[in-house]
Length: 459
Image 1 (cartoon, helix red, strand yellow):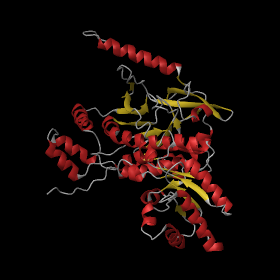
Image 2 (cartoon, helix red, strand yellow):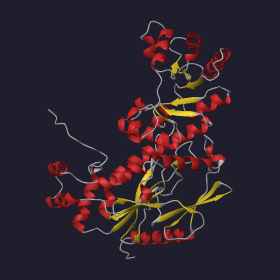
Image 3 (tube, helix red, strand yellow):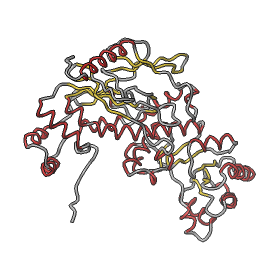
Image 4 (tube, helix red, strand yellow):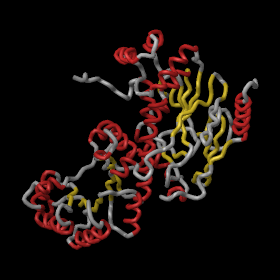
């Protein structure tokens, strides 16, 4: 019988790739404990994306604060072979003691700009790579997708309906959180509502209607329990369902308080028009129309362009899995060690050396240009990377509540150039340049490394 193990990936040091541990043992043997700086960034925009909205920092900081190896985990590692007793013993007191700089959650970012910068003794900074990439990747994808849906919805209500199609329970919770961060009204996931303090939404399923003798009796019973509910009208025939809502309103008179109907199949634009006509004809002007069924930003844009009188949208699968762009090519690279800049020269995977800062220049209330510079440079514009952790503990700037991150995300979308709000790839892309000093250091380090690559030649 397989033994059931207690495991929390959000604090366990075993949530890492094996090679991180083998490198840690090598660092231990070589006495390599000097300060290393790693930066997390991406090199290219995913398809059809003009920006990425950074998210996931809160989970990364919580992980760093709680990071440790338990006795059971170290005992298990010993059974795997390849790790010395001395090394495993050294992990008993393993903690993250470094500092973190990061862009605030909800910030829009672009290729080559560091989202997170971790500075710590080399083994500590190395080990956290897997978790940092995992959380920033998923949550930035979800926040970006949600932001695009909200742009398409043009101020109408958007609710996350994606839990049942998410890639696991953790993903479902994080999609709920980051959808709200990006500006969605809330989520259908009750656990996400409790965990993150975000509004929860729900209507009814077709099965509720099917379980009753007829649709009108189902509506009547549900409205008796939840007077201000939303009624799902497409179980049998959408427009007949609307007629049953009207019949319920006539039956209840002044006691009728149903807030909305939900359309979940068919030609949503045409059904919305006809439903609105019937509702208005019955004097039910305050009853709103909420739509779901395979929606995404493109479909929402087309529905509104067609004049569909829809007041809100429930978006599920496409949001939960970011279907049209399911990955960002995030990287976590060493840029400095023991006070010296480091870089990678691999073809098409170059990483610039040195600890950096990103400066954002705005004019007349709009972002116009970003500059990537070395961290100690003084440049025009707003620096995006701020200290969020020191000595392994969060700083006040690393304790921002979700409501603050949400407000920041909305402010970011407000200053985004109109071209970047398009659902297709913008041409030209948002301009991001490199400072002269960073370019000079890049060339110097490149030349130094290339000299060392020549066999038998000492740099």
